[in-house]
Image 1 (cartoon, one colour):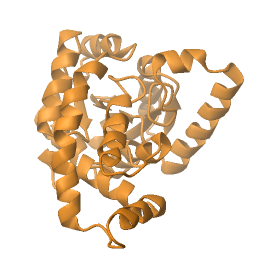
Image 2: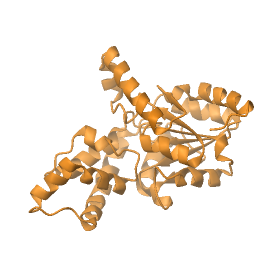
Image 3: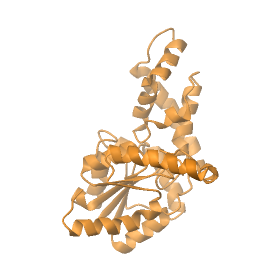
Image 4: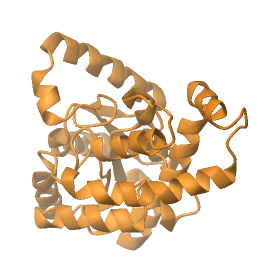
Length: 266
């Protein structure tokens, strides 16, 4: 039987479309005369935020823009540290504006409570950012039993340490009795690395990268195509299951429980 659900925050349970971090990264580089597209900003999503900045800066097009703006010199770790220091207040400022829970998050929390399933939350945000996000979530009725950010562990995703940290706080083991759910490829891979059931979420997440209004306005055929592409990527990354919405998770957990009763492990 499943004993715990470890869920990502932005794009999975809060901030439909994971818009807060994407916008902050774009603005950060814009201030340094570097144009980062929304697609480029979203590629490393799920990583710890300093690592995310490194990943963007390492993209060939971005690295070339940096050199063009710095007399042909590549960025250094000192530059990355300065960018990260600048990023923190940018991100903190916009988080409350993207603090609405994703449909199904509170219902999932209540269902888990009824089933005796513990809930943990992980994030690539730092502690201050996590506090803001959890505050917004709590006001709407989503209060996980444990939480962990990338600053709390040696390495963020795709390493499994945040999942293990939450499980330690919850007193839950083995990892095979845990569902890890998230909207990014690093979420998926971290779940597999932890030895847990790894579940991807599509419509609210970074893979589509659309707000609720943008998703509602999207042509049905186009949405189906984009979802199919994202689903394939998540399955290729190792997801055991990929859901359209976190609202489908209780039904999936019932399916997983039946598999576990047959001796099937992740």
